[in-house]
Image (cartoon, rainbow, N blue to C red; front, top):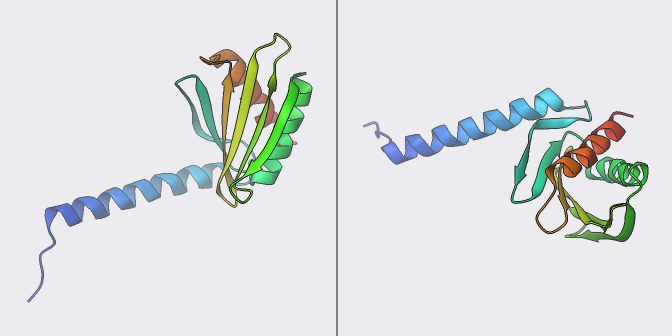
Length: 137
């Protein structure tokens, strides 16, 4: 006798397949391009962007962006067994900034940028754009 799947099982399997298909499409679209995957999200003062690039390459691109934009670095840190890195410092205008990098997979890195306490979307985008440009080099 064949077992009829419960509605909750069907919903869970459908959601799982849809969520994985979307991620694969985003990664395939950006793989090897060294640019952002999908749209950037600005939430609660922090600009989040995924890049189709390994953590180390994104780290180097972030450090180059900081140098190009003449931001002064006060702290560099590596945490969680080198799955997360952070750059802290000040902008030329004296605002504090924080750039956090998180390895999502060996080829995908999330970069979060915050300027000041409440955030500055325009300045955060400027930093993310500089990182993206350095990843293309």
